[in-house]
Amino acid sequence: MRSSSPVRFGSAGLKRPTQPPRNRLAWLQFAIVLVAGCTHAASMAWPFPLGSVLGLVQGQPVGWLQLLALALLAGQLDGARSWRRGAWLGGLFAVAMQCATFWWLFISLHVYGGLAAPLAVLSIVLLAAFLGLYYAAACGLFVAFAPVQAAWRALFFAAAWLLAELARVKFFTGFPWGEGGYAHVDGWARPLAAWAGVHGLTFIAALVAAWLAFCLLAPKTRWRAALAGVALSVTVAWLPVYNVGDVEPDPQLAKPMSVTLLQGNIPQDEKFVGGTGVVTALRWYGEQLHGAKGALVVAPETALPLLPQQLPDGYWQALQARFTTGDQAALIGLPLGDYDTGYSNSVIGLKPVPPGQPASLAQPEPYRYDKHHLVPFGEVIPPGFHWFIKLMNIPLGDFNRGAVGQPSFGWQGQRLAPNICYEDLFGEELGARFVDAAQAPTMFVNISNIGWFGNTVAIDQHLQISRMRSLEFGRPMIRATNTGATVIINYRGEVTHSLPRHTRGVLTGEVQGRSGITPYAWWAGRFGLWPLWGLSLAVTGLAFLGRRR
Image 1 (cartoon, rainbow, N blue to C red):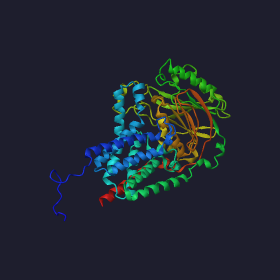
Image 2: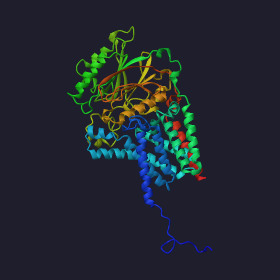
Image 3: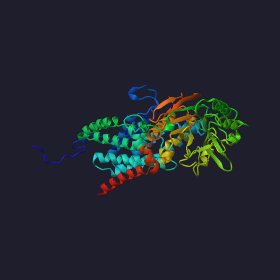
Image 4: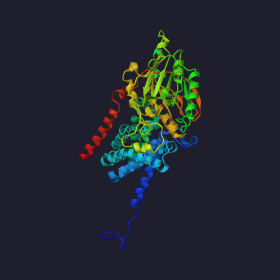
């Protein structure tokens, strides 16, 4: 007969079941999100030379790794006891993700900038921690107001995550480098880029990852996760990529244009030093510009590292005369301005005199594009941070900012839209040029100098960014860089021609411009990021109201 006396735990009764200490579980959670954050960074461009094991090819994006990383984070948040724990987990994930993404800033700060190594490391960690506040807030919000049903909970997680990514794009000049959507420039989500853009892909990937995590955590719904994964893969695999070039191009664009892209590989520690890098750059780029055969010749960002008035006597005049006649044009990166009016990081376009116009009237005002989205601390100094710049030996300081949506460079029926360095990271700003379809660019031209960051994964990451812009807008992009990646990307986001990185060379090829308008180009050009802000805020608002009820 069973005793009716209550069961007592303690030294005189039964022993408590052994459970891991609460602090041990906390440390395990922190370790999981730190590893997941580093995995997320690796998904954009795999940084290790491990061959083709599991599709992990060095320099290439790995979309399933990004889903795995977010699924691990969502799973840990789902078991968090409080919004504070959720905020800590999200913040740690974001700090690890961003430090592992842009660790190469150490090279520019320490190697080329001369900042002491401990201060350089601290600067990167502080930047990652500051940007990580957005993700900490998003994850704390998710834990506090997440719905009970798995599908709605996954939708809420995706909306909160998108809010964090949008905040990183918008606030304090914006630095969305390493956003999750770039991991899907290849793979299952690729067809959606021309509809939703990279931020839309980020939302979709977060939704899928969270849905899979929540279903797998619940034994009764694991079969739903497997079924949903199979159905999604099959559906998206059969979706056609939105190819604006599949229609007949305009008659003016029927003939491909031959291009010559220059990669000088001038060492960054010599690039702005007179007598070494400056002399080498002026000599090599001068020779290539004068001897190039393509219809369009492109020299990279600050290929000529001096102002036009500082160039040797006759140098600039000879370049202008070279492209006054004939059937070739050039886009050349160089700084412009003076002490009184300020300086700009710019592109000058030179092309022949139109038929019937006297040669004496050639190029009274050459085409000019001024960089709009400036790099903080490198091209623009935030208020109160001049003391930080004084700690480094960086030759470029404050620049004037160009306007959004500057005119394209017209040549051989093409409308060429330059962008400088990481400006192609901001698709919504490039979209401003697509409001008027008749004046929309037919081709992007990116000129960059990633030499500041050495021979690192930064080159691969920037290449994935450029490829995503081609997918979003249905436009080819040609890239002329100092050290890489100098490539030709077609309108499908595929690299068709490339130069080996960190070599001096000339890349030649043909490019076919395109004229249609993708859905993304249509809505991003008119509304910017507001549709995405509206979507994410609406979902989070509904979750909040539902939780209150």
